Image (cartoon, rainbow, N blue to C red; front, top):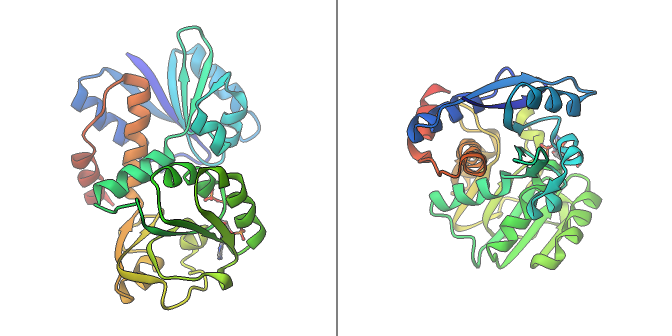
Length: 269
Ligand code: ATR
């Protein structure tokens, strides 16, 4: 039995063990997947111990994605670009390979919902780690434009500069947002606290989609606000399952069917 885990702190509420158990059931892979709370000051030691105990790979969540990035021997181009790693893979040579599957998870979830990125006017709210990880895959899907708006404008502008070689991207504070947009992605942690960034009322183009990277049993404040303005709402539960599927593929070379896993997870919220 090959061993995998998710590292976090805290990690008790992680849905990754249930998701990967469901994938493994589909593909008849004999794997064990557990949740491990790593010490905040020694992530590298936790990974070393896990490998010594037969670990083959791991997912990495808050607050370890940058620590994981630093300990890798080799990085995928998309992980290097993101400056963060959510998937560790132990190579046959004993070296650690790092990848990030968050961005492709978001793009695949949008695809599943029939949201076209090509030619779309896209707005991203927030400029933290969650945004850094998804910018390159979003730009590679050829939007007409991608604007990043953040409470701290400088961080949005700096992020935009970092990916400017990949497409038409810009950054600003919330006050300089100029809509309308076909797709608005909320990646501020304001959602967690039930807060809403100050947004203009004419944000959405007809037929627009509002996507919140957060999810909950009930629609988030942002999705509630968006629905009142006629936008279609999608939460981040699908992104969670899609990023897991891409990690599973990196480890096992098989693509699980995400639909039924997402449905079961939705019912369990
Ligand atoms: P994550 O890994 O989730 O991206 P992060 O790196 O801490 O977390 O980033 C949090 C993001 O939420 C930032 O864009 C932050 O804005 P600042 O850069 O100005 O701090 C944003 N954020 C947090 N609380 C917010 C609030 N109450 N209103 C608006 N934006 C908020």
